[in-house]
Length: 117
Length: 258
Ligand SMILES: [Zn+2]
Image (cartoon, rainbow over all chains, first blue to last red; front, side, top):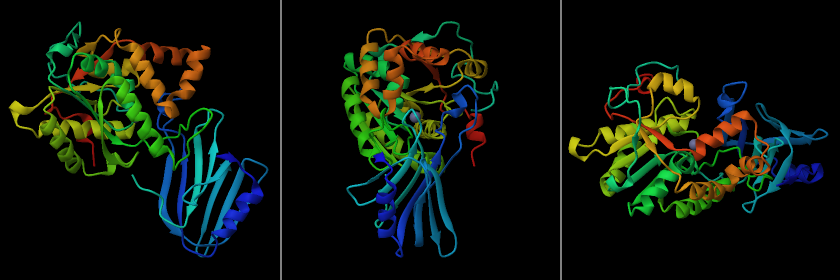
């Protein structure tokens, strides 16, 4: 992945607008937080291959970046995004990483369903 | 992590002061059943290599591709979508180092506990019937920190339980996380595998799981670990410890499952 280029990401968001797209949205602390010094329970959520259609999608912020997708009946939102890439399968992958390179948040859009195990 | 209780009785209820040594010469086959690529090396890589050295067939039945992991390498070279194939390749390489054959159950990472355990246990049982191992290694349900670990631990136990009495392999369970709490709940481990002769290959296999271990090795190589990291390394490279788990023992984890 590369550091987010807002113009490039905005163009990719525009290209997927006004049609049903598959969404992967995720945030994670990792599963092993209970072993850390603070013994915190993990906080993880993901949605994979939900279909959404957005009329307006915007990337904003000074970095880390935020993305909001305005749906007919609601919103998709992510903060903390730092990196992006368009995959070989033409998926737009946006992610946030902490200083250790661990993924903290992901927002991904694809015309085709994301691969399942 | 389950609250420590005294109900996690070991296979043999008599307290054992010194754990029995793991003896590869006494094994007919070793089957390791854990959910993620890298679980095998972290928990029992040295023991797998010992068995392979002794000519004992070693198989790793891996539950998922670890595709929902958050470690992407350091610096990150994987992403959410490429991680699956990368971890599959890393597993192949690690198993080659350890002398094991890798097989996949193909479940979705982080979702093992939401599957029907009986259905997955039937698939695990079929592999046990095919390979006829003398020992199965799995996580101790309720003492394995990660929800996938606990869930597949129970599934492995159900698989062994479902076999006819004379066909059941010995079930060795791995407890991870807070060692003090585990010892308080389960007592001393029953079996200790001396991995001093295979620890180099365990490290090589750990390095093969590059996306998952690179950040750890940066700290090892520069010797900048904290206290907890050092203790983890010592435990990782010391003997591998196992509890004998009676397939019919109903753990708190099993009792409390949905
Ligand atoms: Zn694991």
